[in-house]
Length: 133
Image (tube, rainbow, N blue to C red):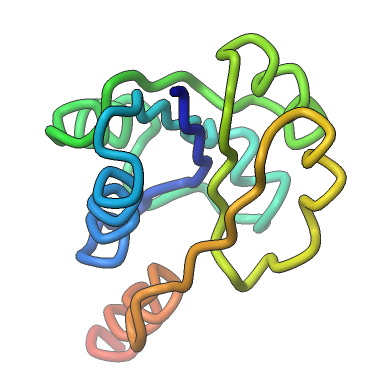
């Protein structure tokens, strides 16, 4: 079984690790394939370049024991193509996107995973900025 999730994984934190652990707990014999947003894609989504470069983020994520394979996510519009290319059985997205990816149920099962409470990359970056002002 192939499970795909996507993310930027900037300023890697326990919430990111929890995503991977929870996927493997739910699907222990699966292959976890992670699409990592490129720096260019992240800029187009958030109007900022990630703190950590794509190359370093990819190395971090691919080194996690729960992750079997990574690939660069270059376009939000190509999610269906990525799901087909990697023969996805399940797409996992954060529950803050609940309902936004339901149309992919035609391709594979969509599972919205609850986020780890009180942790986010945005909050970490804001804290760093505030502490350094």
